[in-house]
Image (cartoon, rainbow, N blue to C red):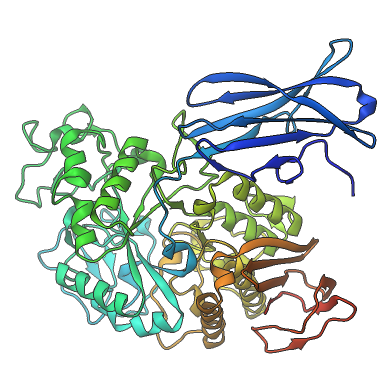
Length: 623
């Protein structure tokens, strides 16, 4: 095997691995070819947040065969930091050569580890529910509720395109309730769910409820505060914690605070400049022109750092954050975290720790959260003082791209197992370990197409929204999609981070983007085989500690085949996935008989090797 000049993922080149706590001593070793004639080397560091450049001479320590060895150490800063580094090598004639990663400096994440991350979230399985569409206990009467609501009398009616709903888009409701969710807690327990993530449940004029009307009130179509507390208590009795969706970057235009439609008795910012809520918003020309989330007029943006708003949402004795933790929630997910100031997020975490020390804070970020730039500012989500973890959209993109064989963000580009490993190794290297193991890993969310449609659908996605709206998988497409979903679920449940199901994916629901991905749960029409597959994986995740917190070790990564192990204190679980359309043969080092927990098939090694032939589009979980 060729010895690298420098590989930050190799213990022979850099220790410790990856992100490090503040103050950690970091040792780096370079091994350039002796034929290059380098006589000196300096480590060049740039601390981004401190805006400080440093240069540290490395020691010419020894020779290793035909390699010259330079080594040296430095102490990570005492404050969280993002460090970019490269090496400047010098020859005897003073010629300089720079060593970096393909023209880009390497990244070193430095984080504050003094504030621990609760371990419960990353160990277990998460289930995301869009509350209006999961389970209802009857047909609700919308009279007296905010917004002009239409209620579907039949649970099985197809969703409608908002653009076809006239002046009141997203005002059609199916009437899912908190009591309905409570009815199905035994079902969720059968899937071995440990976290229930609810899309917004506060009063709102729209079915998605991301345009909050009243942060202190459960939407009456869902129930009341007593129903929420009862749901949390009953869930906790089954070992399930509840995560709420915090939409704090914007409110609804038809809210108690803005009150553009005058529904509320309070004087809103759109009604009077003397309103106590007026400073929460930014008007260009009052009352009709104002800052709004991505220009959507129904979502007026708030000034998060205004002291009154900060007190209302975070700091006050009865703040929104505190109130709902006391009511039974154990976690908050921050909607559009990119839009929230770092200080705002940090204060939420501090207050959550004060109110409920074991509570968990998750952020919605779609890219690598360790180095994300949003609105021309480098963000600090994962440096130990803001979120505990992030939604792992990079995992979703890499996993689906691997299963399909092409980059879902750039269709023409081939994408196989090696690319998945590289994408995840980048995240593992950049993220603090607690954040990597506390990521929310998923295939679908309320903001993406359903995973079954992604995996089974046609190569070319229907161009028109109307065609996507009406598209249903053919029997052949559905068969292929389910096979790939079962194989992918093995990857999802075996990988570090919390495997997350978007309600109904385990039952075989289909659909492209919103609103097609937000249909009602098909009670009585579920794909039972798929449900059983997810339940079996959930049981394994719950009962095998190695799948919860075990170290990740790559075993075999080539073409369509991906194999990795999770190791913890003598327990090993190995996932083997073949996403291709042909059988794949491989050998893995092994000294004892193993069982595929998904099929029950037992395998025996020969001469220290386990020889496997993995069927097309299948996944195995070896124990």
